[in-house]
Length: 504
Image (cartoon, rainbow, N blue to C red; front, side):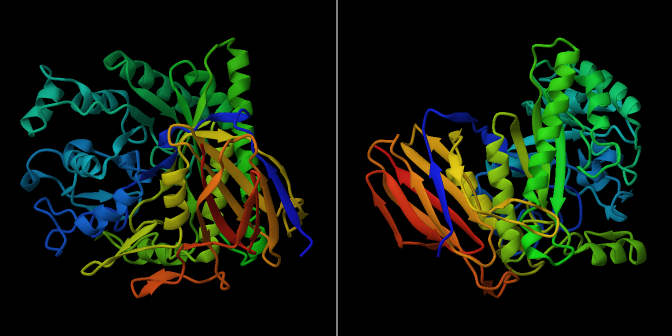
């Protein structure tokens, strides 16, 4: 074994405080995310409101600070009024985004109560596809105004006496996409988003707003979309969104695990455009990023196309139900490391999604609930990736793939939690054929001791979890040496590693 990675971590060389919203998620009215996902009256675990407590228990384990709602593509034809008030008077609508039936049995107030039970704030989205400024303001008034006006009193009449005080709002979703209802040109969206933002902040000046960025890096209008839209919205919004999904479509695992190099390039480009507009406007304001959709998504696309084209207008059809394997969990770990590397600009990130739909948590409609392989890296990052992201000095061997050159064998980041006197190293060996010796120099910290060393390792890249059991789950590792503030370990080929240290 001749490959080695060296990492030097200094507590004074910092990237930024990790915003707790880095570990947010997303639930859309799509497939079985809501109905037969978080909500199923009559299920043995359901509470009086019909929400599955077995699902809620797993959601709570992830300590998710904020959940984006209700979409996604769904939001571009969202009539929020249909989901409030007495359930017996609610309308059933055709959901054009996913060619399904929306019963509105679960609406804004029910979901807000569920999110509160999960310990999560809401990140609300407004419909700028088929609606616009007035509707956005009406929804904001319903949610955040104390009372004494039409929409705030309507909320109170629905049994919600105190305003929600929702802080973060998305100004539409993926408005550059041909698939989006009410698609806009960059100028159209920039003007509409700016005017909507101005009106919403007149109503509530405490809110934060997210302007739509490109739907993904390969969009033909990227990055011109960001430059044009931000030219309109820069002084009125607080974040620009980023969305990105990856998949091993070519069944080339080595190249698949190199795709976070593209994610790095995507982030760098968006940051550059933001800073260009800042300079152009002579602004003192720094634009931050809301990476409010990210995950692996490709396993289910053929089945999804068949359902929507040949079997439309079902209530809660099984859509986007990717079953994730071991290598997918490794890529999710790499994406988490990439987000942490950019904690100075990425302040919000939403794993898309949370239950059943491209999700870490899956349910059986009349049965149990189970954890997908990707549950574990997200869990570890959410639990142990709080504090200050440090910028380590890393020297690692590299390899090439069919589409990427100089791919680092080891990707790693460190997070320092001074309040807890803990340091955590997250590291992935993405070399598929070789174990790598990993050395970490932690001498800038006093009294370093290993609290826990967790790994995800498996000989089969395609191993999956299921209701029958978990083939992919973390285990403790004891084969390491720590002496005089220096750690040495052998990181197995294709592995996710979490090394937690206590400090004195």
